[in-house]
Image (cartoon, rainbow, N blue to C red; front, top):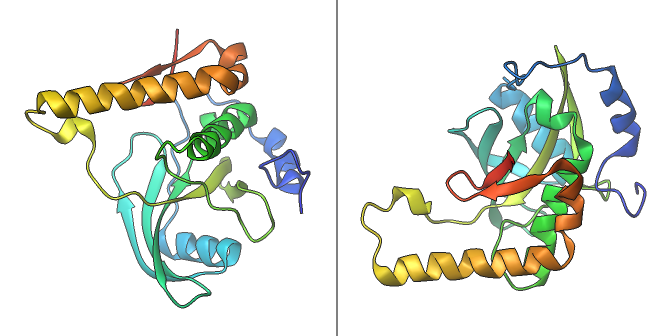
Length: 195
């Protein structure tokens, strides 16, 4: 098992420093083929991939995964392959993982990171131009708030209430992970955005 306080495969993280500098315009979007993704999932999570579907994404690469677990039951996941720019910021990736784990500990429904067979959450996938951070989340069915054409007052209230609960929970302990980066959360993209 890796360092208890680390979510990374520390042996692979050492290779991340070999990655060349990525400019702001060039996020280093991953382009990993489904066969490689299947091997990546099966070799890291002790599951047999039954179905794999690439999801729409901006600069990362995401896959919807249906897999047969060791229990014999099927489970749904999302495999996230981060762009080179994000992959070069292990503290930010670690913060995202810890935020999701913390929110679930506080009974706030959020995607749950799946621990790899090695006991950590993140691995690095070596591609032609560098290393991509890779992790898997338990899939949560539903639709994004932005897809709702005319949300009711109750839906809007519930969305605001949830965001308030998330903000209050994170304010207590996790914001310290992001503080050095002056990061805020932008509600429209639900991702970090520089102030």
